[in-house]
Image (tube, rainbow, N blue to C red):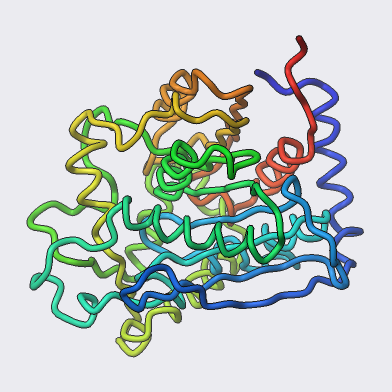
Amino acid sequence: MKFTAQALVAFISCIFLGQAFALEKIEMAEYMVPSDTSGISLYVRNKHLAGKKKFSAEKTLLYVHGSTYPSETAFDLSLDGTSWMEYLAARGYDVWLVDLRGYGKSTRPAEMDQPADQNPPIVRTEVAVKDVSSAVDYILKKRNISKINLLGWSWGTTIMGKYTTENNEKVSKLVLYAPQWLRQGGAPLTDKGGQLGAYRVASVADAKNRWLTGVPENAKEALIPAGWFEKWAAATFETDPWGKTQNPKKLRAPNGTVQDAREFWSAGKPVYDPKDIRVPVMLVHAEWDADLPSYMMYEYFTKLENAPYKIMLQISEGTHSIIMEKNRMLMFSGVQEFLDNPFKPEK
């Protein structure tokens, strides 16, 4: 399905109405949600318009991050006066984010307090799906609703996609930003080769180099507005209790997703089957994404055989981290149109 002229007009309207929506007061609440009996608690953040008391499945959304960095420093990082979380909240949505175990403010497994090489990779996808399930059930019960919209980025698309195949009845719509699928060659940028320990350690320099991989040299300077990368890096590398004490600062990330890539995505074996997704799906991607290239989105799109309808949005001049780049509003407004649209295929 392609966007109509009417939809494109809606895109533009969303962008220019952004300042007016930003004037609305937004409330934030934070929770620690138990995920299982092992003492793991998940950090969950919520934002919605001040005074809002009535919530619906159609306007409730949960976001989950990718394989290296937590949710709040991307989805709720205020850049030029707003974050994607606030953008949605200002438009009447009850918006949530969750940090998986080992990330952000959530509990870090005991293996992360030991040398990495003393344990195998932790937080595999099946564990992450359990964490998302705990967050979803918490939200559904708290808001007294039966369904929710899901939004995942990168590895988060695998988590949300797999969760949906097992829980279609709890999902209204599914948004997959930079969808992960079978790799046609090479290794993920997060995989440096060699034996994998429980976690890996990233630096700010590593983050910047990964971010700009695949970007034409003449486009690098203008891609990220001035100060945005520095603001993201400062917030993100502050989330690791150990890493923020290092000089320069470091950040630990569980290696479960890297092990999954080796055993499944790079070995031609999907972690789940998209044909088991039976809700409307939107795939979002940027042309310079070197982490999860465009061919993955195109191939994944063909596998969504049983979605009531499906949409692709490919954005120019953007990377895996377009959420924090100059063209981010094209993604924000495009996803907003998909979420807002009550479209149903004609019979």
